[in-house]
Amino acid sequence: HLSGAPSWPAVAALRAAVPPDVVVIANGGVADAETAAAALAVTGADAVMSGEGLLANPALFCGNRDPEAGAFVDARRLAREYLELAEATNAHPGDARGHIFKMLHGGLSSLP
Image (cartoon, rainbow, N blue to C red):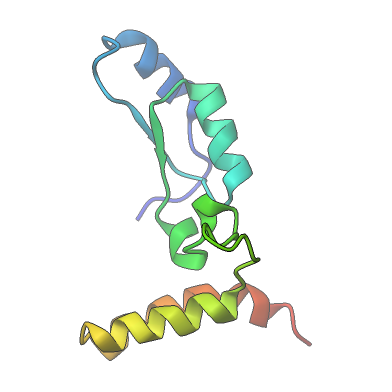
């Protein structure tokens, strides 16, 4: 696990150095849709990848909007849907607990 700021200039240099048919994916520091768009703009990469950001917010790439209804998708809804999927697929409880913690941590840590 690495931490720290991503090096988008390094990704841009890689994009410039390889042929256009080679897919370049920027990774690191993508915690919301705006940062994903900025990473694409700065790097010229073909796509972005998010690990920690998607664990905390599985609706990151749809801007927390339900793709069908357009309604806002909050952390409680995401957690409920995740738990339903975890139960349906017999996910290990420890894995589910860790993911739920990531999803709810931001909102819960802001409470007094």
